[in-house]
Length: 226
Image (tube, rainbow, N blue to C red; front, side, top):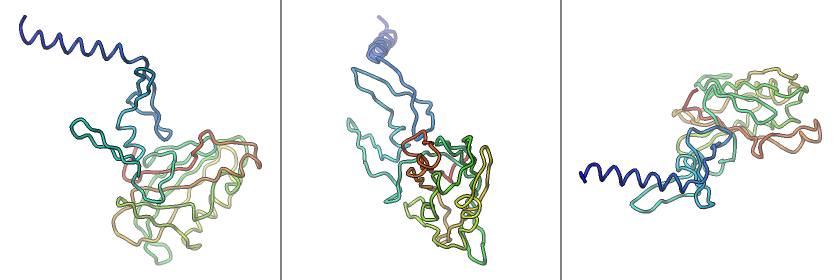
C-alpha cells in the first residue's frame, strides 16, 4: 500500500476512535458568555478546553506531556467571580443590564482621573432603588491594571455622578441611566478592567426578586471592544 494512503488510513482510524469515545458535546458558557468551543464527555468525565480555563484567569501551560495549571488567577486580592464582557458588551445578571462604553483620561475638579462611562438598565418590571437592588457604595467599584494593581474611588466629589445617577437613584422599569465613574489617576498606563461588586442580600426581601446567577457582580475588560 502506498505510504501516503496508509498514513491517511491511520489518521482516519484514530479520528474514528476519538469520535466514538466522545459520548456527548456540551455548549460552554464562561462567566455568562457563550463560547464557540465545546466541552466534551468521555468515559463519564467532562472535559473543557484550556481556553475556557484561561478565560477564568487560570494560568495554563503545556510542556511536553505535562499540562501545568495555576489556581491563582491574575487580579490579586480583588479577583472576584463575576460576569465578564468587553467595552460596549451588555452584561445581564437577571436584574440589571449594564455595559461600559468608554474609558478615558480626563479631569474632574482639577484632578486627573481615569473615567469609565457606565450605562445601566433596569431589566425588571418594577421601579428599583439601586442601593436595595444590588448596587453598593463607592467601595464596590474597582479599577484594575495589567499588572494586577488596583485603585478605588473613595472620594465623595469624584463619586458624585455614580451616587446621584445610580446608587441613590430610583430607576423605573425598563429605564436606563448613564454615569461617569471616576478614579484617581495615580499612573499613566490605561486600566484594563472595571470591577463592580453586587450585593445579593436585600433584593429578595425588598422586591421578591433574585439574580439569575450566583455571581451577579460585573467585570468589564477595558482593553477589548465588541
